[in-house]
Image 1 (cartoon, rainbow, N blue to C red):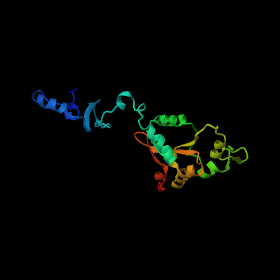
Image 2: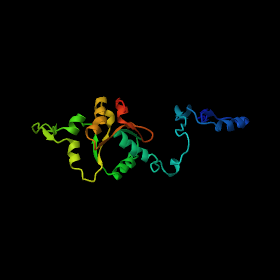
Image 3: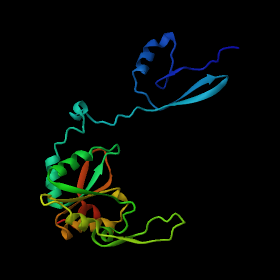
Image 4: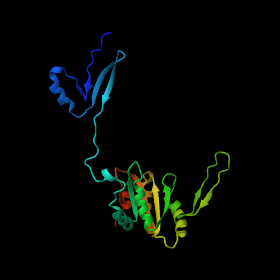
Length: 221
């Protein structure tokens, strides 16, 4: 069987003959672009798609050499913003882990933490500051019961040791909360002066934060 007369592609440009070796060297130096490559496999024509190489980084910084998670020159500003605004909305990278250094810095300042998930939190005002009912799963066999729990924030404020600086309510997945619920969290430090609120409201390429009042639509003072 005669060999199929199919053109060979390299970086989206067809192979040249010996008479056009100069043009081949120029084509091989080009960046790869999106192209369709046609080959003969088992007598059938197959199609391969080459993708363009995308460079996401605009430049090389010191974080490329020693690790971006080790270089945190904004920790001082982080502490000052937490003390000034008292309720912060943070945006973390998707891979996670970066927020741990900011959390540890608050631990060193003497704060204790209450970690909650926004999914299943219910009404934040009722759960955090009031006696609230909880219905345990009955699995279709036990009778439906209702248990009452003390306020999550007030209960832990009373249990803080004397040397504690305050309580940080760290809420993950806060992006599912409504605007009214975020507004209550932004006002919670005014109702409980020893409370600080950190809400994970989304993701970004690097760790960043904004006042929660600004995110929730309340006018910042």
